[in-house]
Every structure is written in C-alpha cells, then in structure tokens.
Length: 305
DNA sequence: AAAATTTGACCCTA
DNA sequence: TAGGGTCAAATTTT
Image 1 (cartoon, rainbow, N blue to C red):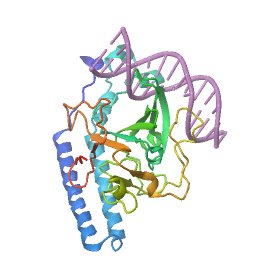
Image 2 (spheres, chains in turn green, purple, yellow):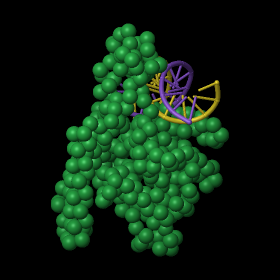
Image 3 (tube, rainbow, N blue to C red):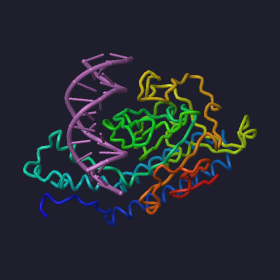
C-alpha cells in the first residue's frame, strides 16, 4: 500500500532471534553462577564476584530488551517512510514536525507490566529511579485521578520505563502503581543496587523473605527490601496533587519502612499479550495475592501467596 | 535558566 | 465513539 500503509509490527528476524536465545542462555548461566557464589561463599565473601555477575546479568537483560522490543522494529519501519494510517496526508512530506511525532506515538501493548498495591507510599516512590510526570487523567468511576510518569532518562538514555499511580482507596489510603517496561537507563538515583522494579529481570537485588527478623514473623508476612535512596527524588512532597504519595526520604533509610504483609501490598506481574496473551488483568488484582516475576533462572517466575 | 509540573488537545484501541 | 494514554506548550518551581 505504498508509503502510507499502516506500519506492521515486524517480527524479529532469524538471526535476531538466535541472538536473543544466545543471550538468554548466557543470562541463565550467569544466574547459575550467581547462586553458586551465594551458596559457596556466603553473603560477604564474594562481593566483587557477585557485583561482576550482576553487571553481566544486567547487560544480558538490557540486550534482550533491546533486541526483542517490537517497537524498535516499528521504528525501523517508520524511518523508512511508513506512517500510521491516521496521518496519510503527512505522507506528502517526510519532514518530522512536532505534530508528526505526535501522530507516531504507539501504545505499548507488549511491554512487561506489573502492579504494586501498597499502603506504604515509600515503597512506591523511593524505588531508586527518577520519574517525571507527563500526564494526569480522570478515570471513569474512579474517585482519584491517575498520574502518569516516565523515566527521567527517557530523553538522554532512551529509557522506556513508565509507571502510573492511582489512589484506589481512601481509608486506609491505598495506592496502585502500575509499572510498564523495564529501565534501560543505567543511572540509579542512589546505590546502584536499588531497584524500582521488584519483578524486573534485571533485578537480582530484590530480596524476598518470610522471615523478617523483626516483624514479619509476628505478622506472618513477607518483606521486600532494597537499598536506601539518597539522591534526587521524583517529587517534592505533598504540595502538588499530582503526587499523592511522596515522602521525602531521609538518609536514614530503614528497611522496616518497607515491610509488607499481604494485607499491605499486592504484586501482580505479567507480560501481558506475550506471556499470558489470554489474560487481561484490567483492574483486577486479587487482594492478598502476590504474583512476582523474579527472574533469576527463567524468564518469568510466579510466586503465589 | 533549567528542570519539573500542569493541562488541554491529540491519538489509539476496544 | 468513549475512555484512557501520550504529547507538548505554558506555567511553576528550583
């Protein structure tokens, strides 16, 4: 259909698929090495080696993300003169105006997506990445608007991670954060081990335990821990309505602030349309259930609580 | 001045 | 066509 046909999502070519498979294999091997290090040397004795392995894992994951992103292939199509059908007139000229760019944006249906419900705002906000708000929407039948954030490093590093946050319950306050896509940026706000993405495949740093030494035993819960945030935070406090959940974190981070129990938070992780094409999560996250895709060995691992 | 947020308009999908 | 996601100019904050 000439230059004005709707751009198709181009599948990865065979060499590209092979490359992905090869990288996945490498990542699995690195994961095995990591668990070997954990078992044989303990937590303290192998820090440099572990750091190295973690860097390797991160590199693998980023490579996979880059290679497997359909949107990257779409981009190729676009750069060869394809436009969406809603902009047929713009086929007359390929000059990329601001309006043209707007026409081109694509929703991400194939991105990894997971949901965090929490009554603990700190967990959502101090996730180790810098976010910039780019929109706010009133949602039908929802009492509170939804706030849209993208990674601050979208412009400089092309990081495609986004999240949206919505208050879903008034009393007690409860917030739902939906993360879409993994961070490809390399800049963490703080300790490089901090992580925003509790189910990221780049995330060997998240620790899950049923044996919280302080309170979990009492609560029968689990906890997620990650490193303290000391650098710039995504927001500046409660003064704007756009950020209902935004405590400024002090340097004295305490993992107990991030203790969770099933009654405090739910996680739901899926790569919808890809991993579970038949599964439409909508707004239905089963309370008290945590499906957590921690990717240590395979592409997805689910934990049901 | 630069960075971040707000907000109305545009675009996509069901 | 409605609802939701994104863009980008205008505005505010740092």
